[in-house]
Image (cartoon, rainbow, N blue to C red):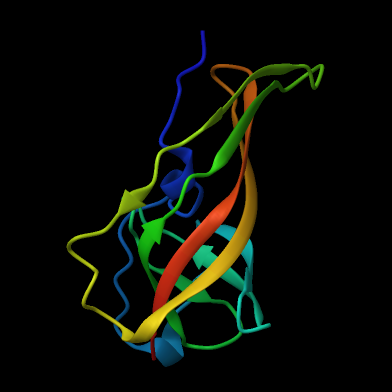
Length: 140
């Protein structure tokens, strides 16, 4: 049977290791990570790369050197489907997650953004589809 996951935050920390950038000009934020589209409440859309393994790993705008630091994930809707048939196996809401460590990092007030992400667990034969919001702060 498949595992229930903390997918709201997990969607933005899908794969990879912690992000460590020697120089923003030399960084390849997509290497080994997932790209997730964000649509933010200020009307701006971004494609961000997530390379971290933690729930609150930062994301990088793939079109600039901007860094997004998640500070909270309100409840996210997670749908689990059979990868072969598309049959819905489970659907649930994740509880809100709030960062205590990153809350004071970044610039300004948190910006609300919407995301949709999916990833396949080949071992379990299921696909996780996550729809939710994240509040972020930015850093250049």
